[in-house]
Length: 151
Image 1: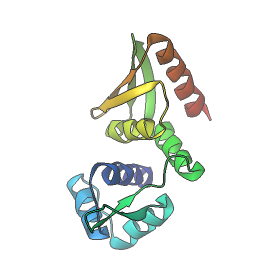
Image 2: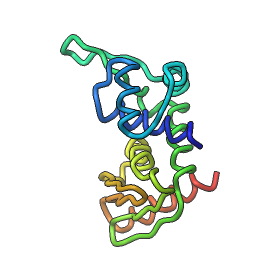
Image 3: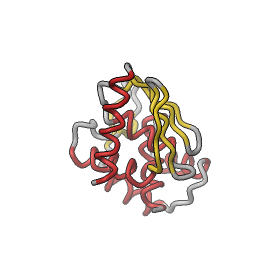
Image 4: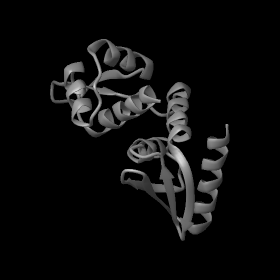
């Protein structure tokens, strides 16, 4: 479970910051309360299939392979399954409750899935507000989440 949380946090961090080195990634993880050795971070980078791309300003940064990748999509689904507790709907908002500390990772996973119905997610510690374009689509998103959590 700790590995899944750490790897979800790594995906979140590389999407949020322009992280150029493993040391930089280790520093961000430490700020978030995760202790990891260089060997562990290196293994996580390999398992997550992170790659370095040019930022255009002469620097490089880690990035996740586009979410069209089946392996990456599976990792996002695992984060969703591991963090999900329950959900409810309020109009066009899907309110998702997660394991404590997992909301940001689950929200990042939902955003990365690029579902056309989802406008975006806002996460706290254990709750996500997932804004969906219409009430009808909110019901559809809930069904997609249920289907993916059951697998």
